[in-house]
Image (cartoon, rainbow, N blue to C red; front, side, top):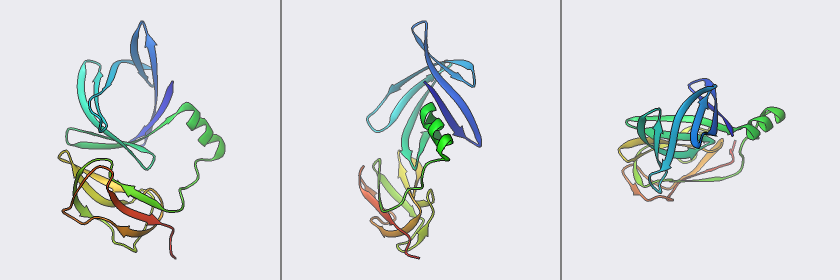
Length: 172
């Protein structure tokens, strides 16, 4: 299966194949030895790549994979070849509309609120900063609209699945 990974302004073609009974990953045609194993039930992965080993926290947000490792967080867009072909053929996905409940995908502490109730936001705009596993994670608006409610405050400890904010249609 082929995937297209967009990061830092570049798109890489990533293909995963079974070669001689071992998983091989090809990035832009170059082969790499790779193994991935689930290391926890909260999106933790163990990655072995070309002899190196990493533990990566993963989550999906606003159509992007968010990968956290060491003291770094990277947002990448990943599409399989069918999704990419459909997007290119139709001119892209429609923008999300309506109302969205933004919920936490992990437990943590709300470090900072970046918006207020009633504020207009764009899709992908940071709503708040959630500190989890000693990492600061930007929680972003899933769609353009108005922040109808913030369900948390700075300094609050929250559980996985907690409601953080409600974003609804613009009231312009």
